[in-house]
Amino acid sequence: MVNSTFDCYELSNGTKIPCIGFGTWKLLEDDCIKSVKNAVKAGYRHIDTATAYRNEKSVGIAVKECGVDRRELFITSKLWNSSKGYDEAIRALRKTLAFLDVDYIDLYLIHWPRSQKCMNNYEQLNNETWRAFETLYKDGLVRAIGVSNFLEHHLQPLIDNAEILPMVNQLELSPQCRQDGAVAFSRKYNMAIEAYSPLTRGNVFGMEQMRIVSQKHNRTAAQICLRWSIQNGYIPLPKSSDEEHIVSNADVFSFSLDEEDMRLLDELSVLGRMVADPDNPPF
Ligand code: 1BO
Image (cartoon, rainbow, N blue to C red; front, top):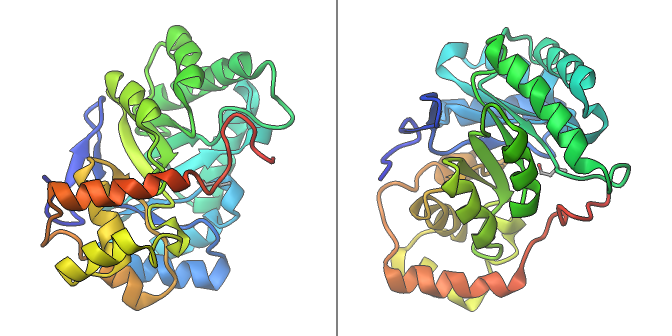
């Protein structure tokens, strides 16, 4: 079991990935720069961005100014839907590197398996995009490659055609959104599982089950959500722009939930996903 923000898991290619990451979705400009710097100060060594978040440049500035060597940080970005295809994906990664002002990133993910513009021939397009990811990986521009929001039926065709298997699947995962099928399938192929929206944007904070577990451990609901994630073996990616929350979200290694706590929290999964359905995203 991991014991601090500095502890890492090993991906299937041997790359080390810190066990908790700082999510940046919806953080923009100065707010993003300040929050990422506060996160690094609080001990996070893993930062998650995406082209769609429109904050790669701000993340890059924070990385330069945070006082920690870039090589000690793990930086993830994601390819947006409009850049799928071999040539487009190669170009998109180069733009991401330019925005972040770095020579390489640690992890590059295909952000979504399908999009409104590509509902039908998505398998072929994902396979072409994946070929570009393999090239970028072999060229050393990305240290690891993976996917996000891929369910079993999106993964299978990609795996059938891949030379290098995805090393990570980043999914919406929280006590209110368990995607057991996608998690089990990804793990069968040695993918590490990252959890985005691990705090449910506060949606479950007022629920009775959460109140019971939170009072029992004298911990915030956010800390309980993150502990649930860590004990499931996920890599949670909490976001906050509040310095106090950034610090307390990193303080989730000195207590543990028992089986009864985990069972109670799992009851919240009746609520289901908050973000988009990977088979019918609104973009
Ligand atoms: C549209 C972005 C969802 C989380 O990465």
